[in-house]
Structures are given as C-alpha cells and as structure tokens.
Image (spheres, rainbow, N blue to C red):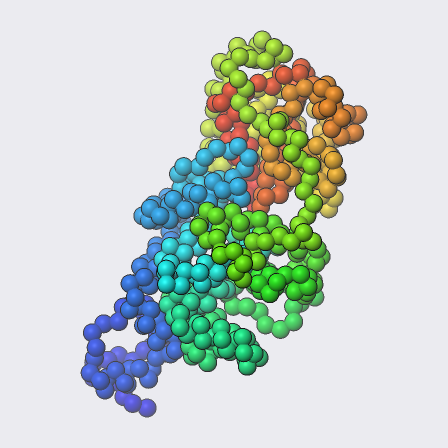
Length: 546
C-alpha cells in the first residue's frame, strides 16, 4: 500500500472519510494519488458536489435547521430564527401552513413562523423546513421537469407513509423518513444528471435484477441508499432518520414490528412502494402493493387504498403551493390523479355551506337574549381563558385539564345552555360524549354518539368535512329533516354550533354547544376568533401528548 506524504495524518481507525469541507488547492500529483486511494466512491461524489456552489449552501441550511432541532430549551425560537434567515423558505412555509391540509376551517391566516410552530407542531415545521430547503436549493431550469418529478415522488411517499402511520406521535418522523428514502436519487438527479439518465436507461433495459440500486452501483460506484445515507450522515441528521432511510429487506412481516424504529422503516417503505405502483399506472399495481404490505402495517388493503387517496389530495395542495405541478400527461402527473374506481363517494355536504360558522352581522338577531347582546365582558372572558390555558400549557399539563378549561371558558363567556366534548372511539369509529357543562348536560353527553360512517348524519358530515358549523334554528323544516334521529330524540336544542377537532384531515374530537332559543348564538369577529383559538388550544394539547 502506498505511504502517505510527509505531514499527512492518516485517518483514525473507524473514522469516516467524509469531511464536508470544500476541495482545497491541489497537492503534488504523487500525494493526490496516494490520498485518492483512501477515498470511497462517496467521497468522490461529494467532492464533485462541493465544486458547485449549491451544495455548501444546502449543507449549511440543513445543518442550521438540524442544530435548531437539537436545541433543548430554545428549540422553537431557534427554529424560527433559522427559518427566517431565508425569505423564500419563510414564505413557502407559511403558505403551506395556511393551506387546506394544515389549516382548520376558518382558523384564520397564520402570519408568523412561531405561530405556525404552535399550531402544527415543532416536528411538522422542522420537517417541512427540511423538505423546502432541499427544494429551494435544488432547482435547475436545465432539467426542471425531472426535479419536479423527483420532489413530487418524495413528497407523495412521505404523505402516504404519514397517512398509514397508526400513531400520530410518529407520523412526522415517518413522513420525513419516507421522503428521505429518496434523497440519494434526488441528489443524483440534480448534481449528476447525465449519470442519472444512464441509470434510468439501465433500469429500463431490465439488465439489473436489483433495479436502480444495482444500476446506480454500476454508474456511480454505490447505490442510491448508500449515497443518501452518506450525505445524511455528513449533514448530521438524527440517527433515527438515518435508520429509517435504510429500506428493510426481505418479505414484509406478518404483523407490525414491535420496535418503533423497525415499524417506521416498513411504513416508509410501504409509502414508497405505493408511489412506485402509482407511477406504473395504479390499478392492479396499487392493489398488489396494498395487499403486500397490509399485514406488516396491521391494516386492511382497502385502508391502504383510502390512505393513498388522502395523500393524493394532500399532494395536490403541496404541488400547487410549491409550484411543482407536473406537465399534463407526464409520469409524475399520475400521482395527482384520482381514477373513478379509486375516488371515494363524495358525501352530500354541500347543503351545509350556508351554515358555516361566521361572524354575525352588527345588528343582533331578534331572537338573541338581551343580556347576551349587551355583554361587553364576552371578549374579556374569552381572552382571559386563552391566556390561562396558554399559561397551563407552558408547563407539564394533563389534556383533560386543558379540555375542561376550554369548555368552561366557552360556556361562561357565551351563555350556552350546555356544552359537550366528544372524543373518537377507535373501535367503533364514533365520536362519544366525554365531558360537559350546563343544563342537563349529563344525559345529553350520554346521548352524544356520532357514528362517522353513518350516511346522511348531519353531525358526521360536519365532522368529516372539518367545517365549523352554526345551526341557528333547528325548528326550520328543512333543517329539522336533516337532524339525526338520536339528536331529535334525546337532545333537540333550538340552536347549536359544532367545532370539529382535526388531525391529519380526520376528526378525532368535537365540541358541541347549544342554546335554548333559535338564533341565540351570536358571535362578532373578535369573539369568533377567540372561540377558534380556544378550540385550537385543545387540538395542540392532544398533539403535544401524542
């Protein structure tokens, strides 16, 4: 073996040869030859990437976000500061957070990064920021269509995996893990477009039984997985993410793995397998993928197909916000399509649009109680409740305590007859009454059972749509006909409002409040905004507790 030139220190045993530093001035030819013998194919690829200005800038941006994520007490402020460094990143992040996927109905515009963190969660913002950093630093008009396809593919894999994840506390990790399983291919497409084209040609020829990994090994000297995880290691991404980037091999297990890390790897792999099936045309390919991974995920094949449809809807929003719409008829456009066979039947919810919760006109309803109209303390009571709940949530707290505070604040400030909080029972897919206040609240709470799969149920339609709704007069004939039987028999208030609590576009809870008089629920702009803030505090409390 050739000796190192004088003054050159050999690498420590077991140390990585990846430095991440830009290539410096050339050394003597004999020194370069000796040193090059110690380099891996990954080192050579990174050196080539370092010669382009985008890669050092990309590395610095990823490192900044990751350092902020590793900060203990100042994590939110550090992440906010890091995102604000990049104007384009800030704008796109806020557009995403305000999109229909993340925004609850009528929540109002989110205009600050710190508010975005409070509403959608630290992990979600961090992962969105990482995704957007890749997008912003890897744009190139010379092969823009190819990069759009690669990003759509990665985003779709993350969206499917997140939809398939049974635990909300793990969904963000699974999203970024599934997306970053495509990191090697994305980097190669951007930095080595000619080699990537050659890899695709080899895969299309069918000469490699191991598919693109074998073709990448032939052309680049290492597979896409090794390339992606090597760069992730250089960037200092978390070890759990690096593990998730390594696809599990072999036949899918017959039941979900007990270890969280292994379970997340299979979910991420399933997400990417679904995307591959869609790129092949969906249909039978998609059903085969669903059947192949169903037992490993502990789900039925149809559940995987349903999750895929939800992910497609999410991707359509992401593509529009990020300006990633693929060319009509392209392969990537198949990720956004919904064939009639796969499109779930649209519920008859349009009739609810006129009942969307909104601020009342300045003149009060003729039915509104006089005391309620002349109460300037409403805003003060609501604002005080918001402040108290925020204080409680700044320290260790119990979710039930936060929910009770939310209900009490709404009940006292707005003069409801009664208010009930319902929570989803996973076994029956039904929202069931759990807590309440007010007149005869106990029997009403026990009567509140909203079956989410019941066709024609007004309460279920509102919750599935995620639409804040105000029914001002239940005695109106057309509205009375839409009320479910259980409500007419056991509750039947004169007016009520519904505030669904949503997670991943699905309802997990509901706040119901009613009044004894038709038109008795009147809200101005400030009161409505504070009411929704209280509801969002309850959502955040559940998210923080997984």
